[in-house]
Amino acid sequence: MITIAEYFGTKINREDVTEERKEHARILLEYVNALLAEAEEQGIHIPKDPDTGCQISGAKDGHGDGGFRLSNSATGKPGSAHKEGMAVDVFDPDNKLDDWITREILIKYGLFREARIHTIGWCHLQTRPPRSLMRSFNP
Image (tube, rainbow, N blue to C red; front, side, top):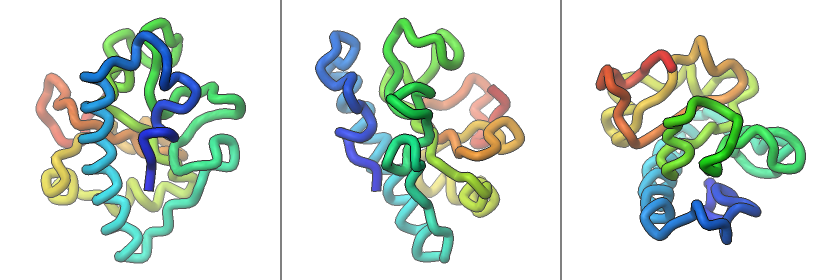
């Protein structure tokens, strides 16, 4: 289970963390945690990233921005859903979660993901639909 505290980390008191973005993150994590719970029930273990100490993928000292990203973050694209509290990168070192997720699973949980060929070692999940409206999309 990913918590709000883990999602925002040390950025929680920054100006970019608005009430609207906190609400986006609350909804995101509700959906993602429900998907992760089902994956666990189906035998897909979601380990903690040794660098972040939680199920969010990232690098030591908070670099990598697998959770919330500040508006000036150099990680990802300028319009990243991470900057709105609408995306998270789940640690998936063996790609078992990405292999398990289907279009039907994404629909069930109201989520979209970056195509797994672009996310080796993590699984990008988001609540904001991409322009293509495809459940699995190319970044």
